[in-house]
Length: 461
Image 1 (cartoon, rainbow, N blue to C red):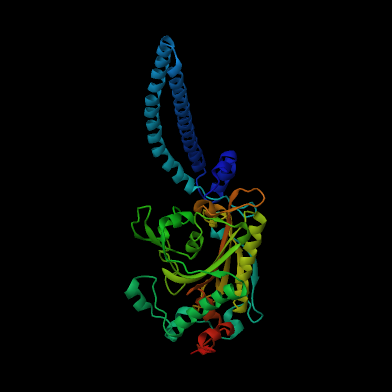
Image 2 (spheres, helix red, strand yellow; image 1 turned 60 degrees about the horizontal axis):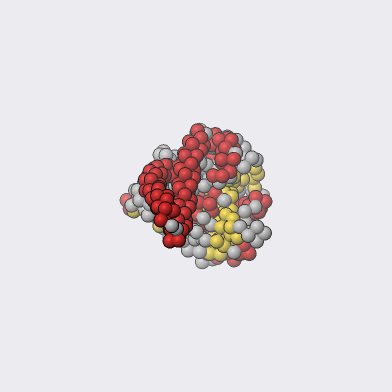
């Protein structure tokens, strides 16, 4: 949620912000118009309340004077009191009219208020879609060069992760679909062990090495948590609403552990000395993938259910601190990917790909040999595929969730800033692991850092 006072003062910032994020800028003027009406009605109601209080005092004063007044004066005072006593009934009627109008207009204003996206930071490139994202940097282990074909470097054509999974019986897609429908799967044997290994490795890295506090969070969350974190109203089509979907107290399946981690401190005032608060969780995530028909239907890239290690930071409301944490959280993930020796790149998301809530977002994409264009022999060229997204949101979520801290310098309650980033999402992260660690005979070498979580096994197959 954006700062409504700031929008009133500088509406052009939000008109431009809307346009850059592919939203209709007219929504800003719609909000301003409704907000002006609500404020005018509220001001009139406050004036009437003040008038009622004043009349009450005046009636009390007249009553006091009447006790000591002579008959003629008492008669005049009685007339004054009669006139004053009639006014509250007029006020009451107008107050009801104002209350009815506010009951109608306030929810309409608030609904549009929730729709206004956070303007992107000024250094985020303007663009319409993911096609306009900008590569920042790449990293690759010395043993592999993404600009040269996998076959030339390794001496054999790569198998896709689907082929490798099926060859070793690591997944059962058919029974997964039988159980839960399309985009479903059952990880089997070492497939499930590898899935748990990467999640445990990522979780331990964040808690043991980086000092994040581990929390368990519910996969089932209230609608107000989805609104508070910015997943409602935008993005609602991606969510599984499972109970009372139209009610304020409805429940939904969360698409990310971020929702539970952020909701943990809803309506709280935190001790400034306790900031930053750094949390991590492992949660099961659910996404409908609406609008993704025909995209990545085979394999583990785009599924309705997955597990994810997530990191969330709540810090003071200082842009420099938010930016520093953004880079630090990206660095944690780079350390993880480098320890796995997976080639990856950092991608600066353009304004049109940020989504409504983010001021900035950096994607990390791992190299996947089975993606990209296919040549005449049916061998794919390889391409990067998104595995992580690091978001900087300033006070957008904390304003909606009412998470504050008392600023020790001003003494005022101030909305915190929040950030989040994937640490590891599986089974998608299994794609580059399986494909990059495959051997010519079809076996799969287990990354060294994951072997302790695989009972010391060095290879699958």
